[in-house]
Amino acid sequence: MKAFLLAAGIGSRLKPYTDTIPKCLIPIHGKPLLHIWLELLARHGIKDVLINIHHYPEKVDEFITGIQPTLPINITPFHEQTLLGSAGTIAANQAFVNDCDDFMIAYADNLTCINLSNMMDFHHRIKTKGGFFTMGLFKSANPRECGIAVMDPENKIVKFIEKPQNPLGNLANGGIYITTREIFSFIPKPTGAPIDMGFDVIPALMGKMFGYEIKEYLRDIGTPASYQAALDEWPQRDLLKRLTCSEEK
View 1 (cartoon, rainbow, N blue to C red):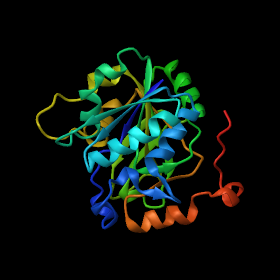
View 2: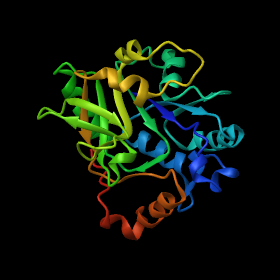
View 3: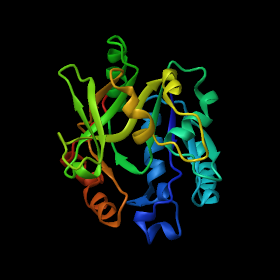
């Protein structure tokens, strides 16, 4: 399986940290967030990853050049002079997955230790039920600030609302998807404006989209407060047993 790792965000909410470093390279106990993601993908059998780059691209390029020889994963950087949006990046790189039945899309500004192998197994099961898009979901303490999904008893997503004023639940979009090439028929044609997965694509996937609840740790580090919380929570060696971060396949 291949993966798109979306890492081009400016990180304006994470200032002043992102005044000098791209958000994807924010350190978590000395290890860049992008490094954590690449190790996670490699651990679960991802062989090829495309990373989109925009903010401080030279620093991300330097990081990729240094880390590539140490990981069993082929890394393809994609420079965006103008941000294309999450779905726009996928559409611009359709050729990257022309040889794949399934592929992953993940937002690199989340910190997680999700068992991706379990999510892949779930995705293969929902394909037998007519689905082609699996969305990773987590229980949010602030559902008004997230994209919220409502599922039926079969885990099919029957409603999805971005940042609802009156949330119907707390299962939120975790920014990790597994899909097939069928997704490209749902991405609008480019008009020059960014194309967003949450606003422009996902609402059209009702009936073909299933939700996978993430049981492991996941946190968006988009603000200084959430970044500090991640530093407090993320397992170091002596804290590993305290958190649910199993990577067993």
